[in-house]
Length: 195
Image (cartoon, rainbow, N blue to C red; front, side):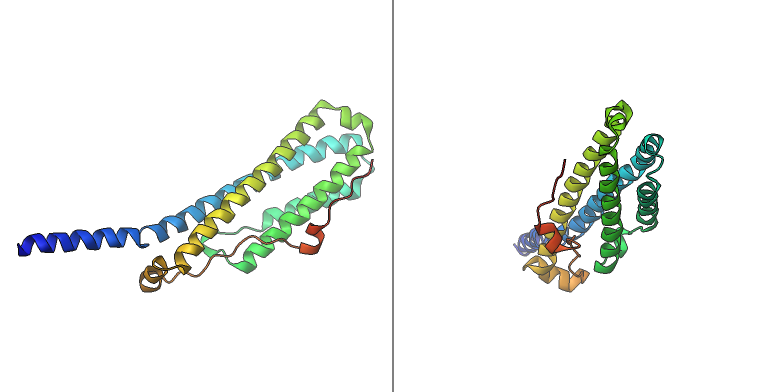
């Protein structure tokens, strides 16, 4: 009888520990790292497409050097900032987002330049690159949304009982930083489109 009660107690302890964060917190941390890798992969895809886009536009708009130089410089700045998921903090995330935001602005100016050149807009290579770049921007948004969701799950595990008790006893993880809009007031305004 004593052996049976010890086995039941051991089984109860195993069930309790498996449902209160012993496995879920490290699993959520791994999920954050995987989602962050996906975000970086999508940004890398964009970086790989930009030289092709710039070269295509350069052939048609050789006197728009300032815009092309801004895109090249923004790409260089964006690729120079690497964020390791293990060292992810609010400051490094903000620097990364800022560099990516500058690149997005430069790409927007490049697309405006393309509107000035009807031959360029008709060029199939440019159209293909533009579609790929637009698709990449959508993929980046999806990857960021998945990352944001994984951060929410992790932060809930480390701050909401009963898993937060396990965190305070065994792991001591802090809440992970979330993506934030660089300029909230600008983001609230609808973009102006002029033809």
